Length: 62
Image 1 (cartoon, helix red, strand yellow):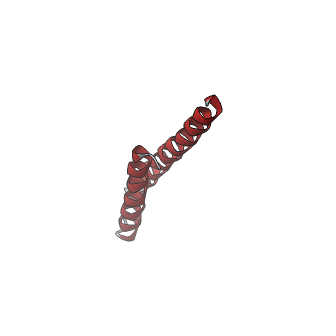
Image 2 (image 1 turned 120 degrees about the horizontal axis):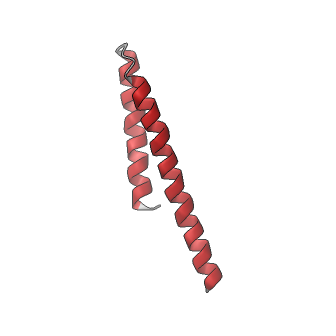
């Protein structure tokens, strides 16, 4: 898995934990964490798919 995808996945997990903590404390700031969770998960999927497509293109060229 690409390094940037791992970083985005780590941000995803931390944002989920922060959202849960915010909602448990009664703060609506958790909504911001949920939005960050969505963005970071999309970034992680993007880099995973990009690495997969790059490997496939490299094998096809060989």
